[in-house]
Image (cartoon, rainbow over all chains, first blue to last red; front, top):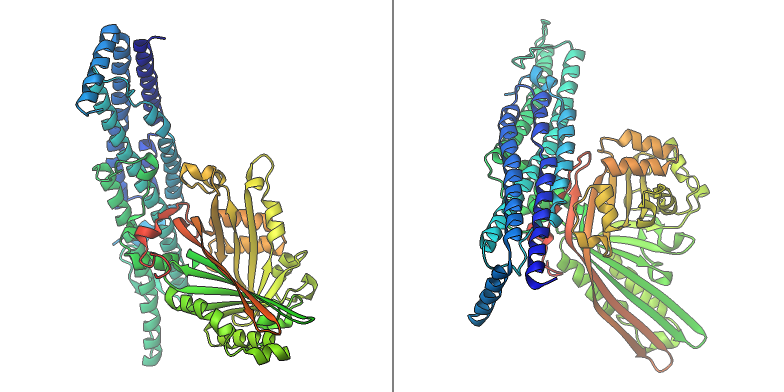
Length: 103
Length: 529
């Protein structure tokens, strides 16, 4: 595998991991369970607060999933577009960074 | 305030189930660490959209840390609220039963307690009035406790909804280090008091060995001291004296060498680590105090050394004094449940200061811990001790030992750092005392001699302390005293064990709180305290 192919493979691997994390977060979404606080403690302050949390968590977990999938897709796209010229640009940038003490 | 009807309608058990579900969700989140690490854009990729990908990954990572922290915070508060509301509801039901038994009426909306009867005798009326006030106060206290638990839980739920729970910038495991709102209010001293004398922060094991040879006469003695600084700063020095060293120590009518093995175990209590350290430092010089050539020449040196040690120990506050190794047949108890536990156990002692019998159930507990294919038996080595008051009443049941870190994570629901799975493991102590919510079941198991069942119940309901420790050797020294006619050799050494991380679970709770002694406890800071 050439240098630029290796980098593209690494980007794809990272993209897959991000997609896995997105799936994992969906299965870890606790928002539905919080509804039961109202069943457990009717007429309580906690029941009212729980209703608000159900919505907040649902949005937050769904939002994270969607953003993670979008990140994964962008990386997948970058890997597809990553060609020899990108590789040369990477190498040149690394050399520049090293010379300027940035790497 | 919460009304009586409302509290009676609350279901703490359901709340506990929500906590359990969230606990499982929290574990799923923490388990995503590998994916998050693997999703990091490769370092070899620096051009093009690499910068945007790096920024995007970091933002997602930080958001996930906050979400994990929120889930954990809500979990611990649900568990805390479930336990507090359960206690409050029980207290309310007890108060209502008490009111009914006395013929009082209770308005379940307003909480007002009344006695419908009339009294001619003012003294009798006053006496009943006191009773009405007492029941009313009990009801108010229960309702107040439930309300406080509800408000604390509501605060935690609102903080999570508003995104105010900070997950930091470290790992997902670090992000879930949460304590309930009720515990957040504790200052370091109060937190230490919660852990109290159940959790050891430092242990220093020191020994003093003596060997005297005078012609054909040989004397050997060993004093082993385990010096323990507890979470609340009190210091206990457990002294194990062998052979002649303990023979002159007397507490009450007990003499040290009453046991078959002639061993004596003493716990000396000190207010702080410094006092205990002074004791240890002086032990060596006190042991040899005024022991001269003449004593050696006449063969009295060993006795003088023993007398010196005994005198010095007797000057201290003796918290526990245990003697003897008894066979089970020699133990007699009035309590029937204790007999079941005694059967087949060989080791027991009597504590003359605490008026308490102790039964060691190590072998049985260890063997019974094994559950086929669970991987539990190989990793868990817990030894047990049942303490019984001399009137036959139950005092406590303790199981303690080393547990593999991975097994501790699985069995106890800990989120111990990953490296403990391959490291030396963790120290686990389970304690069941008279206040335990599952006490009757545990006593019944012990009564039937079923240590295994008692262990399972203790795992589920007991107070649990898990410690991760580091061990260090402080000193090792040998000295020879040559008295021309003979020799006295003294060996001295000490090693220390310090808890770097503690998990604590209150009896009946499912959630472990994590305590870092270095930052959370005031008495941490080495032997100087």
